[in-house]
Image (cartoon, rainbow, N blue to C red):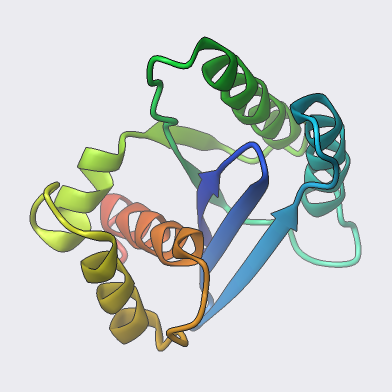
Amino acid sequence: MRIAGVDPDTKSITIFIIGDDRSERIRIQAKGRRAEDRFLSLVEDILKVTRNHDRPPLADYVYIERPFVGPNRKAAIDMGMVVGALRGALVRADIPHSLIDPSVWKTNTMGTSNVSKEEIKQWAMVRFELPGNLEQDHYDAACIAAYGMQVLGKGK
């Protein structure tokens, strides 16, 4: 079984897939200065990743980090559009998925929701033998995927 953890953003989408005794990282980097331009870029690349017929499906199940909605209305709308596009692509690819709150995946993988970015990084580096020079999104996505494996009863 392959489980993917996704850390979405309006500038990039980071996917970490675990299963089949290996792991895989995918980074979709948006192109464009304006959010509208980046959105179109992300949508094109999301569709490529979820519809790639030269490889097995992206995952058997995908967990997407539920975006934090702060006081910035425009940022919240932009983020909602990105997550909506991602979910739409997963639906079209017939890949089941769920949104997961950051506090839930942190508590289930790290034991508490009050963890620093450095603690998340260290946990993911040890658990998945990741290098220490990645963007934080990679470590977050790895922890989200690990949470997914725990939920589906496939280990810790």
